[in-house]
Image (cartoon, rainbow, N blue to C red):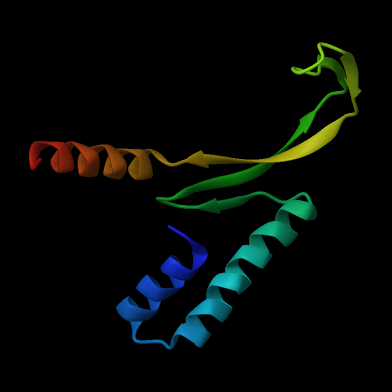
Amino acid sequence: MTKADIVERVADGTGLTKLETEAIVEGFLNTVIQSLRDGNGIEIRGFGSYRVKKKNSRYARNPRTGEKVFVDEHYVPTFKFSKDFKSAVDKGMKLKESNS
């Protein structure tokens, strides 16, 4: 599913225009990015939480050449699904399998 697909489904479900829905989706995504850039986490109850984790500097290997490469410390965004989210996906997939 692409961002355009999400916009279409939300627009169909809310009665908003695709243009209005696209602005909302873009606003949400930009808010998440900006919050994480500012060092803030985001928690959406029943959905999950976004956090930023610091990765220490280390030596790694280039898989093609086997050459040892130094990787600077860096920060990566992470997402942890809520228990409700995981449960809903599990139930949906099991229902889908039983109907096949």
